[in-house]
Image 1: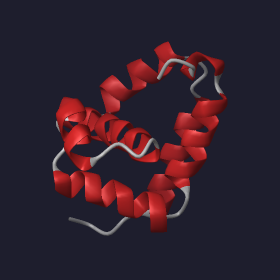
Image 2: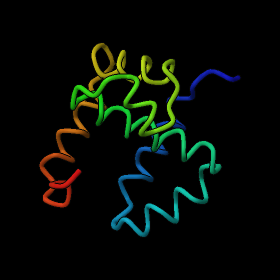
Image 3: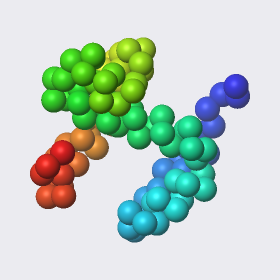
Length: 101
C-alpha cells in the first residue's frame, strides 16, 4: 500500500464539502467507494455512535456485525484520535433528524 497522499486526502475532503444533499452524497459514495468500503465506513460510524451510548462490545457486534477488533479500533479513535468521530457525532446529535437514533 502506498503512503497517504495529503493532497489527495485534501481533494477528497473538499469534494465531500461540495455535496449539498443526502442524495448527492449517496450518488457520490456509490461511485467512489466499493460496496465493501462503503459498508465498512458506515459500520464504523454506527459503532462509534453505540460506543458513545456506552453499549457493550457484545451488543455492538450483534447490532452491527462489527468484529471486536473493529470496535476496539473505533473506540481507540474515539478516545485518542484526532477528534473527528467526536466532532461529527456531536453535530449529528444537534441535528433534529437524529432524535430517534
